[in-house]
Amino acid sequence: MLEELINATGAKKAWSDGLSPRSDLTGFNWAKKPVALPELGFMSNANEDKKLATSSYQDKLVTGLANGIDKYFGVDYNYFSPTKNIPLYKHMTGSATIGTLYKSEEFPIITDEFVNWYKVKFGNTFRYIKKANTKGVSTIKNSHLSTNRVPSKTFTAKTDLFVKENITGKQKTIGTINKNFIFPTLKELDNWFQIEFSGRIVYVWKKIQQCSTKDAFYLVLNSYNHEIKI
Image 1 (cartoon, rainbow, N blue to C red):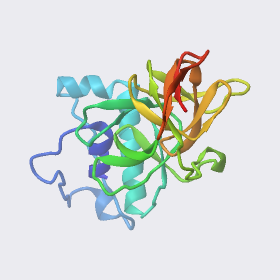
Image 2: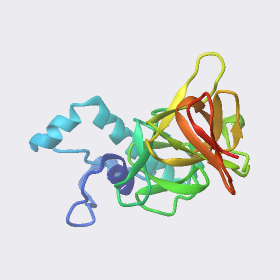
Image 3: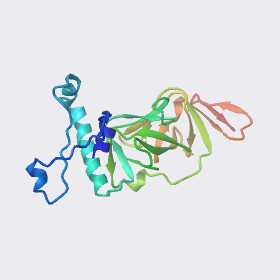
Image 4: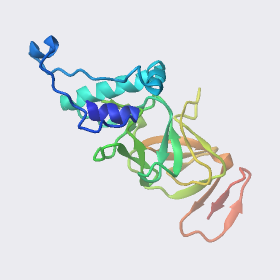
């Protein structure tokens, strides 16, 4: 639980292991089930007092507690959902952001082998998000998941791109791809590229991209103002 609280809030671990066994609390001594009494902050600390009064920090605390309980009981999540809009990182250094995953969306976890990071699929490679500000999810709609198709083209974003879950009816944005990032496509439609974005099949608007294929011989500038190699 302590580890998950730290992951969710970004708080620093105490100089010791952060654990203090007690023998003077009735709730502990008489309990027939596992018991923990987490200290979530100190109102005597001005900075912590301000955080504790905000709903956003309270959400982080609840997420950390819930994840810690799940971990104790061996609940294994294959998916996660951001509790706020969170950045995608190129490396596990906390720098070089390449996009954003939106709050309350659901995405597959590739590996959970790192203490503070999830590895996620991003195009034809892997990228990273911080576990803080995420919660575990047991299931996800199959229609949202990638089918491991091989990309045939790539595009370069001319501006920060909104990633859409659908292209009919009311469009829903689930994240962004940063300007100048090169991204592989799965399928080319009239006005859209179909792509794999953090393990999900989604779409970006074609008009403001520059796209290309491998083994190309010449360029054609079409009416959508992006270059296609043929």
